[in-house]
Every structure is written in structure tokens, then in C-alpha cells.
Amino acid sequence: MNTTPDVPPEGEAPADAAPVVRPARPEDLPRLVELVHEHVAYERADPRPPGLADRLGPQLFAPDARLWVLLAETPDGTVAGYAACSTEFAFWDGRHYLHMDCLYLAEDARGHGLGAALMTGVAALAAELGLNRVEWQTPEWNEGAVRFYDRLGATARPKRRYAWPVQAP
Image (tube, rainbow, N blue to C red; front, side, top):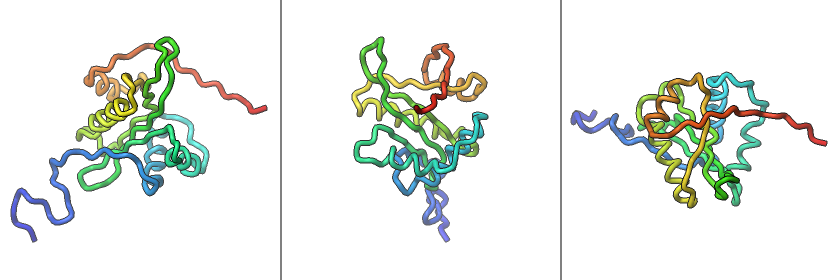
């Protein structure tokens, strides 16, 4: 047994360890899908059809993938959140930007710096890709997310988001 107060027991990270943000790996897919389903429920969206891992895996891990997922880990190595991003083109600006489609943290992981770490990782990804802007949306009712994004210095642009299901011919 370790009796030194500043050293955690073997195999454990210190309580004040910096959050870890890293790219998703194929072996993370089951946990990522769990988090996606939690996120869908949190945002009061309709459940997604079965087979999400089968649809996401090829999009995330193909050699020419244009979708990036960053994972946030707690100090003990538990994957507790994710940010999913892809590039989009802003016609009025004539340039691409990074669209953060999702950012989610498990409920018990909130308030520990993981969200800020994910956003720092997203900004670094945008810079690495040569992009000068990140855009995203959040539900108006999600007051905690709105406060978090406001504290980051992000600005909201009021628009209504539509979805239009299209039948294949």
C-alpha cells in the first residue's frame, strides 16, 4: 500500500490530472455508440435505428475519412465524451470550415474540464486542417451548453434548422 499522500495508488491517475483528448480508434466504437445513444436521449431525439456501429465505423476509420471524432477520457482512462466533426463549405465566404456536429459528455463527467478540453482539441483539429472557423448548434433549451459556449467566447447566430426526409427514387 502506498502511504505517500501525493502519489495515487498504482494504476490510478492523480485526481487533478489533465483531461486527455484523443482521436477515436476502432476499439472505441462500442463505447462511442453508447455515448451517442445517451446523447440522442439527452437531446430528446428519436432513437436511431440498430447498426449504428456498422454505419459509423467505415466513415470514421477509412483511409480517406473526412469525419473526425475526438474522445475525452477521465483521469482513470474512461471514455466519457466525444466531439464529432467534418468539414463543410461556406458559400458566402468561399471557404471550408469545421462543423462540430456533436459534442457530448456523460452526465457524471460534466464540470471537470472535459468539455473545455474537447473544444481545445476541436480548435486544434481545425487549425491542423488549415481551417479558421468552427461552427455548431445546440438546442435552445440546453441552457448549460449555451452558458458553456458563451463562456468560451463563441457567438450565437439565430437560425432555424430544418430536416427534410427524402425518398430515394
